[in-house]
Length: 212
Image (cartoon, rainbow, N blue to C red; front, side):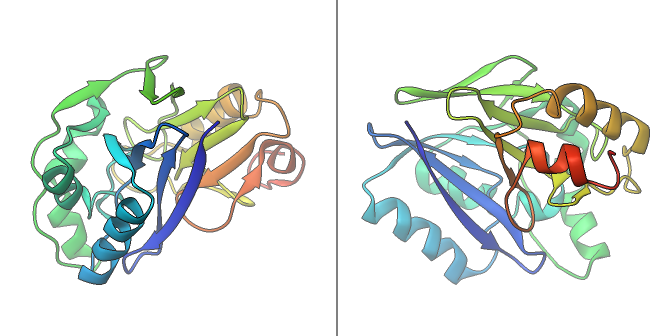
């Protein structure tokens, strides 16, 4: 059984996650640490808990979700793993940051790609990749059916959904993917969002104004 640690980083208040189990192997999801003290906070948690990072993965690659990728890649000797349809967002990350008044260094091209139904394994645990584009061209979510946990990135929020007015976004595609791939999961599934608090599939199925 794995544990989840959430950090809220950078000026956009993005949620970065570390998942780890009893083996101490861990996966870093959506590394958004931007300021020095945020990178130090992430590193301190990994060090104090004697964790061994084995994957650096992203739900999607909008600039606020990859601000800490270079740091994690370098410090922990990790490959940067994304969906192939997100490459253009990595290439334009610093440009998009400038548009929001947040200067950031360019992020090098990803090292490897995952696709739908792939399994991200760490220790005795795993996450299944579910493709859910619409907020971004190659957005995914990561799901573990045994623990009923979903790392949703910016696909689904508490009472809301990801914005679809950015390049590569589509409201129709996003809501279709949420309804057909996420709302079909067990209602007690806990959803860890890319911004804001956690929610559950059952709550969103019943209450989310974009989906009811």
